[in-house]
Length: 53
Image 1 (tube, rainbow, N blue to C red):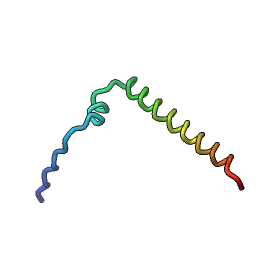
Image 2 (cartoon, one colour):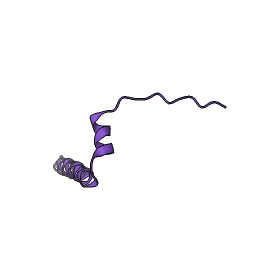
Image 3 (cartoon, rainbow, N blue to C red):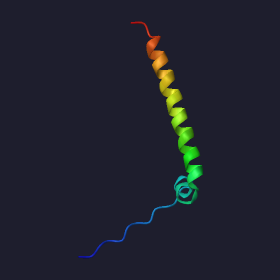
Image 4 (spheres, helix red, strand yellow):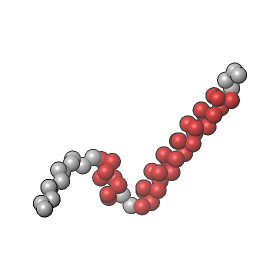
């Protein structure tokens, strides 16, 4: 059985970052993403609390 060759996809800056960045840089990236997500969720919860019932 022959295995077909996988089509090579173009590298993106995002994928290059994850291949070449140091673990500390990746950690900082994920920390920023998590903080932003938490802020957005808190804003959404505040809006929900202030909605008329």
